[in-house]
Length: 322
Ligand code: NAP
Image (cartoon, rainbow, N blue to C red; front, side, top):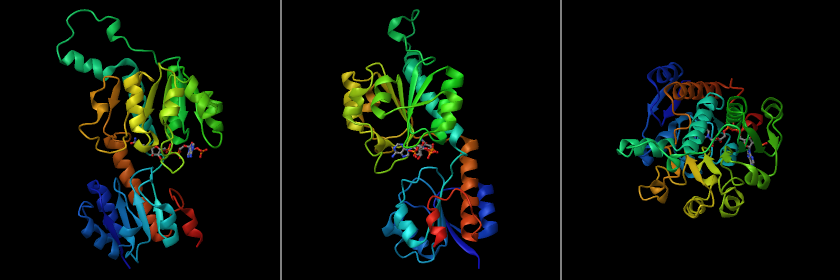
């Protein structure tokens, strides 16, 4: 029997064509939630990203066998609930690692060297004489980078930092990352030590109940006053109100942020008025090449999951044992 797939995000034409070779594909705009829920009721699989899929939304979806998210993060899903229902969840690790690490490094450099702020300053016609200390930034090379969550992306950031910028790398993880220790001299420390010693604190943990609000007022106080916080993980890993206070009070020097508690970032967010904040619109993996590779990978994951041939990129492997 032909698989029925709901695509709830626009796919590149060649990826959609690939899916159509293997399944009937119905394109649905998930903002029309009622239509989306109805479509899921008929579907064997669904592919998309950027929206929360709650247990209530799939309650009547009796034929649903697999969900494929076009992302590595899967905090938009209730994984335990999917496992109970016997629904496979697949994601797209690896293909986005390098471009996301580039975004992290862009934030590090832009924050330290005030690239965005000073580019705006030039455009506003303020460059009327040689620049002075008022326009100086701080060095990146040779400094200490603390990576909270040194996995795939954290590892690619550590490589850039250690080999490209001769930085010292500290990290926290629940288990050691031996490759990063060996190849990049990364040193595993407790979070408090990482916060106290790092010039740049970079979050790359998944969003889970344990990492929700991981960096709050207490943690920000433990950072150096000269330090910069970089967040390209998920907004809620940082207590945004506490961060805003810390930036206002000079508790830390600045922040480079790709993710926020609420996205899109509300126009009245105090972060937008701060010169010491670089705010990006969640562009971690957003290059033409990487987004295409992610869509292709997610499509292959879905077809493999529905055919029963998929062996990797499965979030809840337990389902396969049932
Ligand atoms: P990963 O390889 O699974 O790395 C996550 C790291 O965090 C691991 O080293 C893990 O080590 C550590 N970790 C997990 N839970 C932890 C906890 N409770 N406390 C401390 N450390 C914990 O994932 P990845 O591919 O690097 O992606 C990481 C995250 O980046 C994704 O989940 C996603 O949210 C985010 N991301 C954002 C963008 C963007 O557009 N800004 C793009 C891609 C990904 P242990 O298991 O040993 O603790």
